[in-house]
Length: 290
Image (cartoon, rainbow, N blue to C red):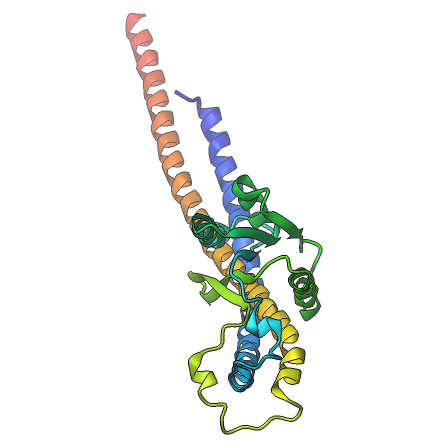
């Protein structure tokens, strides 16, 4: 049985841990508000961009001059998985849920005889995926030095992806991230971004419009920007999801620490009481013997 001194050290250590998790919870809560606002502000622009491109793409469907970002390469053999995760842990299942979705998708493609390549954005996803897919990882981008996410960060990623696509390194690109729903709910999401998936509802409403210049020329300019916009949205959604998950994880850790302190204190008091009772019995027994 541990001594009273050891028990006091454990209680003090647990209390110190509780203070740290409480502080991290408060920091995550303060950062979540700003991250959530940024993510929600980006959604209408990204959705509208997709709707506009979908409308134009419907008019350009089947055109021999349609950009490759829309029409694709005509093959479905090589897949690039753009996996966006966080740079830090202590956020519950945030990182692992994105990695799990990407891993299952990769394994499904490999089982179909497809070739898989992985582009990791974020340290945690890279660390987990390289255990199984080290040879498939073609690039890793670390954003730890970025204090505040900007559109320039998404543009940099989009340029790297486009360069590989133009070089013929892959046929299909799928983006993986976590969509922020609430503090306690983040949804792992897979979104095909190359070639662009046009919804039938958007394509069906294109006959009432005429474009100047031609649709193919407009798409050639809009599609690369849309790629950066969708990646930027994913980064912002991830950022909000990370702080929401971390806030929940640290809240649970703080509560668990409080429960541990309660149990440790109870054991300490019982042990101390038993020790005092034993000493009293020894004193009384010694007095009677005299």
